[in-house]
Image 1 (spheres, rainbow, N blue to C red):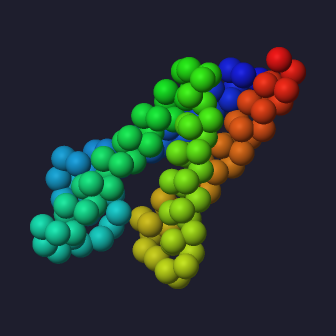
Image 2 (cartoon, one colour):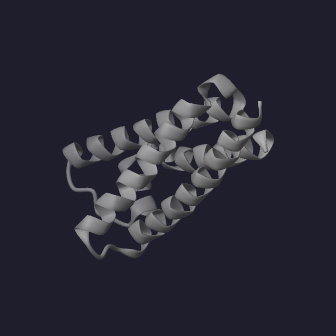
Image 3 (cartoon, one colour):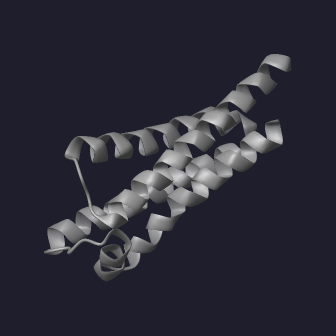
Length: 126
């Protein structure tokens, strides 16, 4: 159970590392999200978002590898995935690329729930 929880947390961490590629250029971000990035301000904000997702993904990978950091990995994962899905739902219909991210985050939430439950069950037995 402990290994499965670690693998699931690592998978969600890897999912969070994908947007880091957006740090390379605004054009890459436009392709990833299917939006036109107009101006340096928007590019700066979205590239910074990519960095933050990299940090969250790194925290989740650390939690997957080191049991003492697992809780913070779960917290980072839940905050980033649930907040994005919530904001997207509050904003209403979006383009296909953003919808794809919502679906991916929904899968991530499911994986995190299973991983957290397995980790909790394992810690109760120890």
